[in-house]
Structures are given as structure tokens and as C-alpha cells.
Image (cartoon, rainbow, N blue to C red):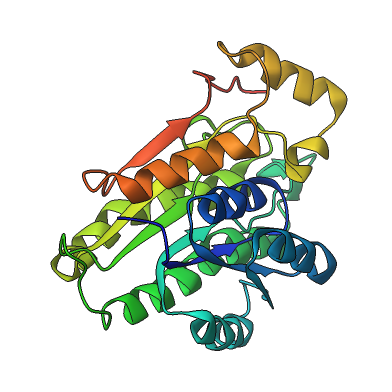
Length: 252
């Protein structure tokens, strides 16, 4: 897909991987709608890239519908990238106490249900768009995680949510193939984001040591560069791509 001139929606676009993606797509010529709960940061990013900000809690269906209603006035989306997510750590059971069900449900609501709500609505709109010269109507890029495959101690909820995103990728691509809509997910490793910066120093250091090469956290712009390539390469479809410097997470 030629990105120049198309409208893209990026959830979680005010910071981290979402911000890196919003900037990369804008540099490629897209009109970018930034969805986020942080109005101040979201409006700043949108202003700097010539896009528009729309307040959105991806876990709330009414909020998603409201954000989409505003965004489509900016332009019907042909690209949607879901980067909104949260991480919290808790074991399945610890010292005779079961994992908090409310915490588990919260993580699933944001990371999985929030992804589903946004991509299903985007896909429904893409289906009604005229096909481009190559027959394509849209591209969906979702954010999974290496934790989907190498979940660590205390990551049962997070790994479940990200594993489910990876699991949705192929059936989504199959559902939408006849409409010329591709679906791909990215499983990032250690990246410089607020989510990772919130981890204890010893945990971040351990993760960096496990990243074979380059032995450093990834940059949000590197994630954005892969999103751009996915959009521009029509043969990428139905796959989860690890972007991780060859990291394989240890149990702890």
C-alpha cells in the first residue's frame, strides 16, 4: 500500500510504540489520527505530525465508537495500528492467595478486547472502501509481545492477552482476505517505552542482557519502521513478526 495520502489510526499514539508509529506513518505521508487517553501528550504528538487527536479508552466500546466517529471525518482509515496496552505483574497464586480476577480482567480488557474493538470497527469501514489499484483496501497491524511465547513469572495475564492477539492474526487475515484487507501483528521485545521504564532496574538490566544483538532496548522509531514496511509490502499477511534482537525471555 502506498501510505502517502491515506488516513491511519494509531491507538496508544501519544507515547512509546504508538508515538513512534504515528511519527513514522506521518513521515511517509499519512494523515494520522492519534487515539489515546492522555489528551495533553496526544494533542502534542498530533500537532507535531500534522494529525488529529481523539480521546479514546480502547477498553470502553462507547469510547471507541466516539473516537471512530470523529476520526472518519478526518478521513476513512485504510491503516489501523493498535499500540494501546498495559502490563501488571502477579502470579497465578502466591502464598495461598489466588491471582486477582479484577486485575486479570483489566489487562484482558485493554490489551485484547481493546485491540479487537478497534480492529473490527476499522475492518468494517475498510470493507466499504473502493479497492486500490492492487486490490487492497486496508492494513491492520496489532501489537503482541514476545511474552506471548516466552511469558515470565508473574506475566500470566499479560502473556494471555498478548498470546491471544497473536492468535487472532491468522483467522483475521483469513476473514478479510476476500476484501483485500491484510492483518499482521508484531511481537516486540525490550523497547524504550514508559511501560518498560516502569519495571525495576534489575529487571530492565536482565532483559537487556538477554537481547543478543543489538544488546540494547529497541527504539519506538524502529517499531514504527516495521509498521511502515508492513503497510508497504503486500506479501506480509497473517503473520506475527518478532522484533526483539533475538531475545528469549528467561523464567524471571
